[in-house]
Image (tube, rainbow, N blue to C red; front, side):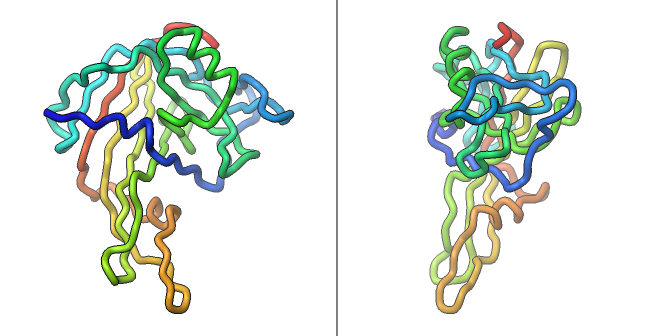
Length: 211
């Protein structure tokens, strides 16, 4: 079986124009960014986690198998996204050691290989999206997008689980006169639970170290 799950390293992460809760008890912040206040999100999850299981199936969403050359750690930390520089998000990125993970979290940059969770909470779970491709279908005013839907949950004490499902959605282009555009926001708005799952990635990890 072929694996191309390096897609998490090259995906374009999309953040929507609404903020996560960033005040109150239980907020977490780390690092500073260009003189702005430290990014904070209402979560107890930012930490370094050791990956205990990394499985996937790029030909469907059943019978996930171990993925060779899996990363050793994933770190969760708050960051300011480029598309919404005043609204902190919960990010996750892969790393090879606790020290490297802490350095990435201290830098607090938008993850370039990993996850960007834009809404949710620790109790109900966090959700994020990544658009792999988005474009028009032939000469029509229809668009087709391949989207990853990331779900972060807490299955037990000091443990996290991240499920990534890849779906394909079609939607109407935004038409302005003689031109039509395929907007990322419209692609995300068209996602629903009835879309068939094209590929699956499952990550399980346990708490290794605080930031």
